[in-house]
Image 1 (cartoon, helix red, strand yellow):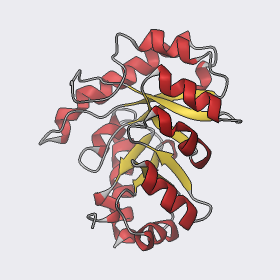
Image 2 (cartoon, helix red, strand yellow; image 1 turned 120 degrees about the vertical axis):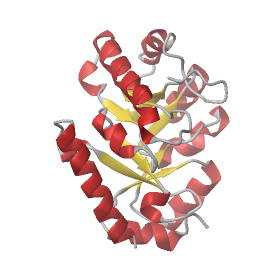
Image 3 (cartoon, one colour; image 1 turned 135 degrees about the vertical axis):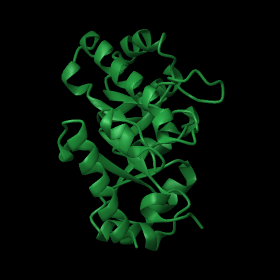
Image 4 (tube, helix red, strand yellow; image 1 turned 60 degrees about the horizontal axis):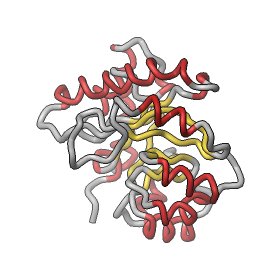
Length: 223
């Protein structure tokens, strides 16, 4: 099943890349493995999926100790008091949204961790993330943390019936990336856009996503 799903997804990504004049290799797929069984995750790895995203600290810990040599990303809201636990297990954090978390991560790390700043592009009160208006100041303050490598931005648009409804939010995130890139001391690192899920990933790719986060469309429904 996963093999067939991956084939279909790859074809959709390729079509979106061709439509937007992008290269297929510039789009990286993260399998959202929350609430998925270990055998499903291992099957995905056997099919060539090599990056997995988790939302919950305890679940990440259990999988991290059960499966060796996996590339884990943390894509959910991370409590500051869990930073020390999560930091050694992940290759990237997609949801950095406040300085208190940045400070805890920086203290917990002995190496540089790639991080993405979560931006609340829709302005929804229910969404986590830095507001577009606060982003410039937030990025400047982040640069003082020597163990955090600022690599780009992440967003979650409002739920929508149509993928096209998400396009304006993806486009806005890309605009923010390009706008604030020159402000950073290492602008060449600030190039990643984590956006797009099972419902809207082709549109996200057309708008510049470099990471797409796919759950059910790839791994099947969660048990």
